[in-house]
Image (tube, rainbow, N blue to C red; front, side, top):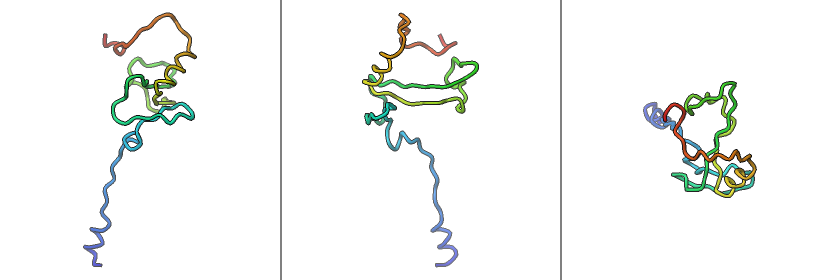
Length: 101
């Protein structure tokens, strides 16, 4: 094999893809194997857990280093978590981001 052929043989392409694009999104509940690919089905919820000395009202203002968990829960485990949380008597429903109302 000559030098020109060796150069062609060593050419490769590196492409970054999200893990979810390869495996789908899985429920973060320990032991649950529920998953989906593509758009999130009705009943699933996305959960973002982060720490900040000064909590941010805009998702894009949260420094990635402060994110502790960025995951989804299937409908069963979304309900299970909701049942464990305090009820403050207010259902805010979908809301615009802070400053976007």
